[in-house]
Amino acid sequence: MNETIREWIRKSDGDFRVADRELNEAKEPNYDAIWFHCQQCIEKLMKAVLINHGEIPVKIHDLSTLSRNINRVHCSWDWFDEDLRFLSLYYYLFSLPG
Image (cartoon, rainbow, N blue to C red):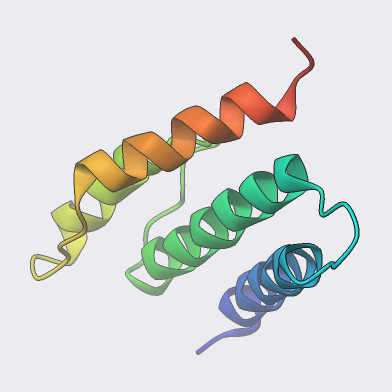
């Protein structure tokens, strides 16, 4: 594993820790932040997988698109597209006001 992949994984781990802290916050957890950081955690891990397979990940936040890109280079990749679309949708909905 090269340093670039390790960096993506470290960043992903940071997002996971933030989401976990907020989720365990007894008083007023920030659910918007939980959605945001969960999506970011998964996105960064998916991009690390692509880099590991010699691909340059596209600058996109859509997990379904990233999943299709992974499936091209890693044939055994299998993640429910409906779940990825759901998480991406809420990432967009909760990351902006209104």
